[in-house]
Length: 212
Image (cartoon, rainbow, N blue to C red; front, side, top):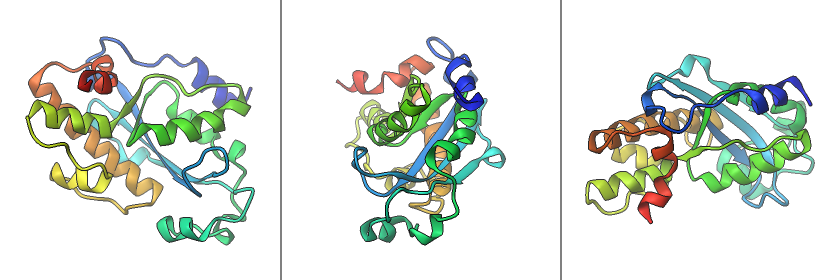
């Protein structure tokens, strides 16, 4: 097992009753060749830490991955990453080692969790590790805040959710830009939800259950 994988697997992660603002988070965003984890691939990734309720933008991580097959044109139109742009990038197993180190000991935060769950799960499996819980989802947290405010359901897209919270959008469909936007959205959502009731890592992780 690589040092990055070992650190990720063994580092303690805040959970349970830890007040949300006292926990350590890693916001992750992926750019992909498509949305089917069985056939599509991770092309780029970004990670942004959050400590003490603050986005640590200066410690953000960004990386590229060399795909095993040509990037489909439909994918290039979304994120602009061409096959030629990734020819010199490391393979996925190599590329994600810094990502594992960035995620170690931190609660993972994403937007629309099934995407990152699927692709990270498949990426981690050959390294002998699993994606660790909890994984917090800003999409579900946005829905939870709308319910608390007795408002219509919020927009599903990250950009529209950011705008609804009065936040800037950082370079859409670029892993680092979307990770920064997601990080700011998460802090805003957790702050607003905490005004209704005290939020912990566990309560935020249960957002979907609370909606049901």
